[in-house]
Amino acid sequence: MTSLCLPAHVGAEAAARFFRRPRIGNLFGLLAGQTRVATAVGGDPATRALPFIERLWMPAFAVRVHAACAKTEHSVWTAVEGINGEFSMLECHHELAERELDGDVFPPVIDETRVAAFARKGMMQYVLTQRGLMNKPIVDGIEEILPYHHPVWVCYYRRRSVFLDVMVQDARTGKSGGPKMRISVLHALVKRKKELREAENRQSYPQTG
Image (cartoon, rainbow, N blue to C red; front, side, top):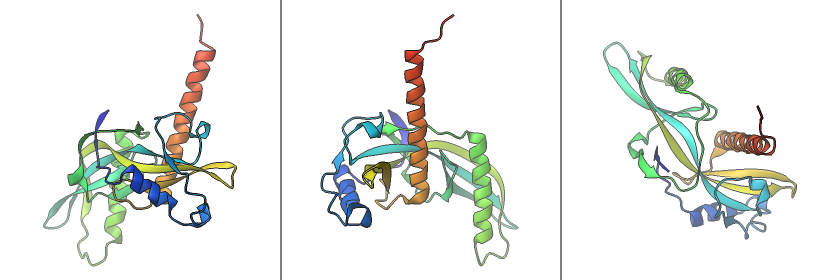
Protein backbone atom coordinates (compact mmCIF):
# COMPACT_ATOMS: atom_id res chain seq x y z
CA MET A 1 0.00 0.00 0.00
CA THR A 2 1.26 3.48 -0.90
CA SER A 3 0.31 6.45 1.28
CA LEU A 4 1.46 9.87 2.35
CA CYS A 5 3.53 9.25 5.48
CA LEU A 6 6.44 10.28 7.63
CA PRO A 7 9.62 8.21 7.19
CA ALA A 8 10.44 5.27 9.46
CA HIS A 9 14.05 6.02 10.42
CA VAL A 10 14.23 3.22 13.03
CA GLY A 11 14.71 -0.29 11.68
CA ALA A 12 13.71 -3.60 13.23
CA GLU A 13 17.05 -4.33 14.91
CA ALA A 14 17.26 -0.87 16.48
CA ALA A 15 13.67 -1.18 17.68
CA ALA A 16 14.37 -4.58 19.23
CA ARG A 17 17.35 -3.12 21.09
CA PHE A 18 15.15 -0.27 22.31
CA PHE A 19 12.61 -2.65 23.83
CA ARG A 20 15.33 -4.90 25.27
CA ARG A 21 16.97 -2.08 27.18
CA PRO A 22 17.03 -2.68 30.96
CA ARG A 23 13.91 -1.51 32.79
CA ILE A 24 11.61 -2.74 35.54
CA GLY A 25 9.12 -4.34 33.12
CA ASN A 26 11.63 -6.90 31.82
CA LEU A 27 13.55 -7.43 35.09
CA PHE A 28 16.21 -4.99 33.90
CA GLY A 29 16.87 -6.90 30.68
CA LEU A 30 16.73 -10.48 31.93
CA LEU A 31 13.42 -11.27 30.18
CA ALA A 32 14.01 -9.36 26.95
CA GLY A 33 16.46 -11.57 25.09
CA GLN A 34 13.85 -13.49 23.11
CA THR A 35 12.03 -10.48 21.65
CA ARG A 36 11.54 -11.19 17.94
CA VAL A 37 10.26 -9.33 14.88
CA ALA A 38 6.86 -10.44 13.62
CA THR A 39 6.75 -11.87 10.11
CA ALA A 40 2.95 -12.01 9.72
CA VAL A 41 0.83 -8.87 9.32
CA GLY A 42 -2.46 -8.34 11.13
CA GLY A 43 -4.44 -10.81 13.19
CA ASP A 44 -4.80 -11.07 16.93
CA PRO A 45 -1.48 -10.54 18.81
CA ALA A 46 -2.75 -12.74 21.65
CA THR A 47 -2.65 -15.79 19.33
CA ARG A 48 1.08 -15.39 18.55
CA ALA A 49 4.15 -16.25 20.58
CA LEU A 50 5.20 -13.41 22.85
CA PRO A 51 7.12 -11.18 23.14
CA PHE A 52 7.41 -9.82 19.58
CA ILE A 53 7.57 -6.46 17.84
CA GLU A 54 5.97 -5.18 14.66
CA ARG A 55 5.77 -1.87 12.84
CA LEU A 56 2.33 -0.28 12.59
CA TRP A 57 1.27 2.73 10.56
CA MET A 58 -1.04 4.92 12.62
CA PRO A 59 -3.44 7.43 11.06
CA ALA A 60 -2.96 11.18 11.42
CA PHE A 61 -3.80 14.44 9.68
CA ALA A 62 -1.51 17.31 8.75
CA VAL A 63 -3.54 20.49 9.16
CA ARG A 64 -2.39 23.90 7.94
CA VAL A 65 -3.94 26.51 10.20
CA HIS A 66 -4.21 30.21 9.34
CA ALA A 67 -3.72 32.77 12.08
CA ALA A 68 -3.63 36.56 11.95
CA CYS A 69 -2.74 39.40 14.28
CA ALA A 70 -2.69 43.18 13.87
CA LYS A 71 -0.04 43.42 11.15
CA THR A 72 0.95 39.89 10.13
CA GLU A 73 -0.54 36.59 9.01
CA HIS A 74 0.78 33.09 9.60
CA SER A 75 0.23 29.62 8.15
CA VAL A 76 1.25 26.93 10.63
CA TRP A 77 1.34 23.17 10.14
CA THR A 78 -0.18 21.15 12.95
CA ALA A 79 -0.96 17.45 13.45
CA VAL A 80 -4.12 15.77 14.65
CA GLU A 81 -3.82 12.10 15.60
CA GLY A 82 -6.41 10.03 13.72
CA ILE A 83 -7.76 7.84 16.55
CA ASN A 84 -8.37 10.14 19.52
CA GLY A 85 -7.76 13.54 17.93
CA GLU A 86 -4.69 14.51 19.97
CA PHE A 87 -3.21 17.83 18.78
CA SER A 88 0.45 18.74 18.32
CA MET A 89 2.59 21.09 16.30
CA LEU A 90 3.98 19.50 13.12
CA GLU A 91 7.51 20.75 12.58
CA CYS A 92 8.41 17.87 10.25
CA HIS A 93 5.73 18.45 7.59
CA HIS A 94 8.50 18.77 4.97
CA GLU A 95 9.27 15.05 5.53
CA LEU A 96 5.81 13.96 4.37
CA ALA A 97 5.98 12.00 1.12
CA GLU A 98 4.26 9.17 -0.73
CA ARG A 99 5.90 5.91 0.33
CA GLU A 100 5.20 2.19 0.23
CA LEU A 101 3.98 1.08 3.66
CA ASP A 102 5.25 -2.29 4.88
CA GLY A 103 3.25 -3.47 7.86
CA ASP A 104 -0.22 -3.17 9.28
CA VAL A 105 -1.95 0.08 8.25
CA PHE A 106 -4.76 1.52 10.37
CA PRO A 107 -7.44 3.88 9.01
CA PRO A 108 -8.53 7.03 10.85
CA VAL A 109 -11.50 6.91 13.19
CA ILE A 110 -12.36 10.63 13.12
CA ASP A 111 -13.52 12.53 10.02
CA GLU A 112 -12.13 15.79 8.62
CA THR A 113 -14.86 17.91 10.21
CA ARG A 114 -13.75 16.80 13.66
CA VAL A 115 -10.10 17.06 12.60
CA ALA A 116 -10.60 20.75 11.73
CA ALA A 117 -12.29 21.36 15.08
CA PHE A 118 -9.48 19.63 17.00
CA ALA A 119 -6.84 21.60 15.07
CA ARG A 120 -8.55 24.94 15.62
CA LYS A 121 -9.05 24.31 19.35
CA GLY A 122 -5.54 22.94 19.81
CA MET A 123 -3.94 25.87 18.01
CA MET A 124 -5.93 28.41 20.04
CA GLN A 125 -4.80 26.76 23.28
CA TYR A 126 -1.20 26.69 22.03
CA VAL A 127 -1.27 30.41 21.21
CA LEU A 128 -2.71 31.30 24.61
CA THR A 129 0.09 29.46 26.42
CA GLN A 130 2.89 31.30 24.57
CA ARG A 131 4.61 33.95 26.63
CA GLY A 132 6.01 37.19 25.30
CA LEU A 133 3.42 37.76 22.58
CA MET A 134 1.83 41.18 23.12
CA ASN A 135 -0.60 40.76 20.25
CA LYS A 136 -1.50 37.11 20.20
CA PRO A 137 -2.62 35.89 16.75
CA ILE A 138 -6.21 34.84 16.19
CA VAL A 139 -6.85 31.43 14.63
CA ASP A 140 -9.29 32.27 11.85
CA GLY A 141 -9.29 29.34 9.42
CA ILE A 142 -8.16 25.93 8.21
CA GLU A 143 -6.29 26.11 4.91
CA GLU A 144 -5.52 22.45 4.18
CA ILE A 145 -6.00 18.96 5.64
CA LEU A 146 -3.79 16.08 4.51
CA PRO A 147 -4.33 12.53 5.82
CA TYR A 148 -1.08 10.65 6.41
CA HIS A 149 0.37 7.76 8.42
CA HIS A 150 2.92 7.83 11.23
CA PRO A 151 5.21 4.81 11.83
CA VAL A 152 5.43 3.22 15.27
CA TRP A 153 7.06 0.09 16.61
CA VAL A 154 4.95 -1.91 19.04
CA CYS A 155 6.23 -4.58 21.42
CA TYR A 156 3.63 -7.09 22.63
CA TYR A 157 4.35 -8.88 25.88
CA ARG A 158 2.72 -10.51 28.89
CA ARG A 159 2.53 -8.27 31.94
CA ARG A 160 2.83 -10.28 35.14
CA SER A 161 2.81 -13.34 32.87
CA VAL A 162 -0.96 -12.94 32.40
CA PHE A 163 -2.11 -9.70 30.79
CA LEU A 164 -1.36 -8.81 27.16
CA ASP A 165 0.21 -5.36 27.07
CA VAL A 166 2.19 -3.15 24.68
CA MET A 167 5.13 -0.78 24.66
CA VAL A 168 5.43 1.77 21.87
CA GLN A 169 8.32 3.49 20.13
CA ASP A 170 8.05 6.35 17.64
CA ALA A 171 9.65 4.82 14.54
CA ARG A 172 10.52 8.23 13.09
CA THR A 173 12.34 9.76 16.06
CA GLY A 174 13.37 6.63 17.99
CA LYS A 175 11.87 8.05 21.18
CA SER A 176 9.40 6.35 23.49
CA GLY A 177 5.88 6.78 22.18
CA GLY A 178 4.52 8.09 25.46
CA PRO A 179 1.14 7.39 27.06
CA LYS A 180 -0.96 9.18 24.41
CA MET A 181 0.55 7.21 21.52
CA ARG A 182 0.23 3.99 23.51
CA ILE A 183 -3.46 4.66 24.18
CA SER A 184 -4.08 5.33 20.48
CA VAL A 185 -2.37 2.07 19.54
CA LEU A 186 -4.44 0.15 22.09
CA HIS A 187 -7.67 1.71 20.82
CA ALA A 188 -6.76 0.85 17.23
CA LEU A 189 -5.93 -2.75 18.15
CA VAL A 190 -9.16 -3.17 20.14
CA LYS A 191 -11.18 -1.78 17.24
CA ARG A 192 -9.40 -4.11 14.79
CA LYS A 193 -10.07 -7.12 17.03
CA LYS A 194 -13.75 -6.19 17.28
CA GLU A 195 -14.00 -5.92 13.49
CA LEU A 196 -12.33 -9.31 13.04
CA ARG A 197 -14.72 -10.89 15.53
CA GLU A 198 -17.74 -9.37 13.77
CA ALA A 199 -16.47 -10.61 10.40
CA GLU A 200 -16.04 -14.14 11.80
CA ASN A 201 -19.58 -14.03 13.21
CA ARG A 202 -20.97 -12.99 9.85
CA GLN A 203 -19.22 -15.93 8.21
CA SER A 204 -20.43 -18.34 10.88
CA TYR A 205 -24.00 -17.05 10.90
CA PRO A 206 -24.72 -15.60 7.44
CA GLN A 207 -27.90 -13.58 7.11
CA THR A 208 -30.64 -15.15 5.03
CA GLY A 209 -33.60 -13.80 3.14
